[in-house]
Image 1 (cartoon, rainbow, N blue to C red):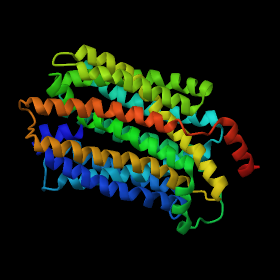
Image 2 (tube, helix red, strand yellow; image 1 turned 90 degrees about the horizontal axis):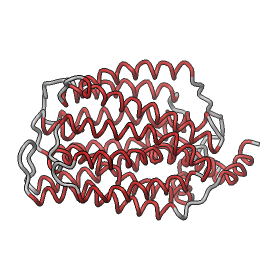
Image 3 (tube, one colour; image 1 turned 180 degrees about the vertical axis):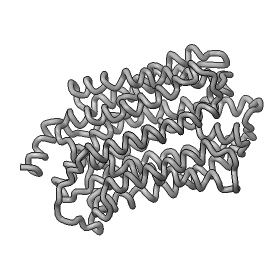
Image 4 (cartoon, one colour; image 1 turned 60 degrees about the vertical axis):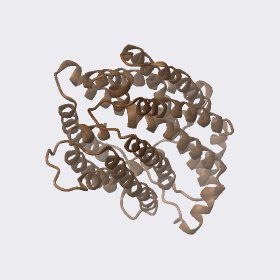
Length: 401
């Protein structure tokens, strides 16, 4: 929603927004391996990194969505960079702590599911407010930020107090060998390739959602909120379903099934036109249900791959390995953003004005057709990925026995 917010509320040129987001993402991308390195070298305590990250996120959210006055030209670039850096400082040690909390194949997925479920609940309830109260899009975002800052303070405080930091002390890692070993880890390379392609598939609709609703389907703010409400409602319903399926069929098969189903049903978006909001809600419910697997399975698989890497190369680099997930996710966002907003700028797109047929076609194809192709490609890449529960038990027996 950030691009649409700055275009519609602050009257920013769409190409400028894309450029600033891209530059901020470059800074953000560079910070991922650095924070992963700080985490694994134990330069700073993981919980301390989480505290610093939480503070920066709070400041960045306030500056972006609540402060009304734009004080200087690069305002968006500065504060979105602060927000991104804060989230990196929070997320990487947070995921690393989660890796050390649980070793069981299925319980790792369950832990991931519980984490994502709370995130989805937050999104769901924040989107529920405007369905019962008459909020504009800008007012909604400001209320969400206040709730996020308050609930974040409560949640982080509880975590710091109650969750142990079960880091196992092992020999110091030699970073001159880390990069070469990462390339030699074939499981990791295939997983990250599939993750990157799938991240691209998820980012295009994320960036263009508001534009697609408004300029292709002819929807308004309240209809955007209704669509997202049902999308995240069904995502919440999907999390326990995909968790159960992963126990029965394994993580890889579960993820592949969800990718194929999501891509198949998203095909119908290509046939929608102005006024088809109800049909779009139905499609969003199905793809939202599939989102549950996208959220919970990859981090759980990455935890398993971390054990494989530790066993093979004798390197405990969970921070760096989880930073690769955030790295490729952010890289996909940067690439998609610069592509989308550059083309929209070339097509003379202006917010709050009528758009031409070429722009509508571009928005539709970027919102739906490109993600469909990428989802199918990601599922194809995952076919060659092989690590089962029995494989993990053998690896962990060598590590922890």
